[in-house]
Image (cartoon, rainbow, N blue to C red; front, side, top):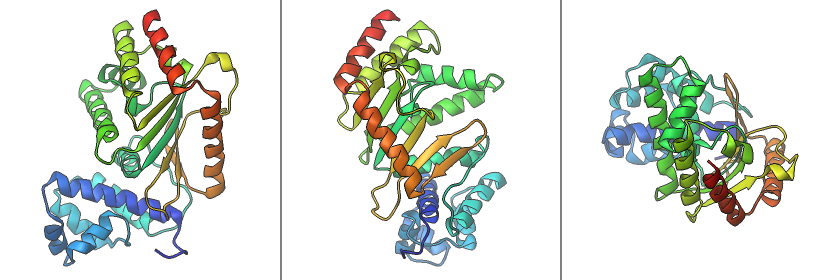
Length: 287
């Protein structure tokens, strides 16, 4: 990669590459077979999946056909991402009602070596139980049919496998006390969620802290956000900001640095991991 390459394009390359890898593996197709379909070598497929080369539209079209992706909207979303992967840009928004939007974040999340977040409204998706996730989705999408709710919950649970995978990232979650006290799904759902948080907080790759009401105003005045860090040294950190109808991916150095400072202050001002577990235990007895 050259110095002139935009960090925005690098993020999109790794993003598209990870999605192509998942599609190939889900079909049980080898890199060699994939390479043959686009008149390229196995190593070329490997470089594509790692986001280390630019993408040609014809190659993406042929691979999507090989992988059985026939839905025109899904093909268009991935081909659009391929075009964007060859362009510069500091941020990009994706409509949160489009299939590509969720795949975009999952691709980044799955490629990260370190994930840090602050949540205010509810428990972070990687830490939600099935019952809690179902309640959150139902509350947020009250008109959605049951099948769609189930699909959204299933995708959320699939994401959580990342925390116990061989490539599990370091995960630092700061949860506002409000997220722990706001009920979703009733008493038993909340009790199960609190027990799950206590158990997950014991995992060696997970650091869970609570920002208590007693601290008062704190550094995360702008609301919830997630910071993603990647193992490649030349790939910048990305801050993910979810909005009502879109999401932003910030990778401009000075913008990301501001969020990193906020995370540092949150870590210092929140309860320690041990104190946070004690508070979770107290809340469990209150519910």
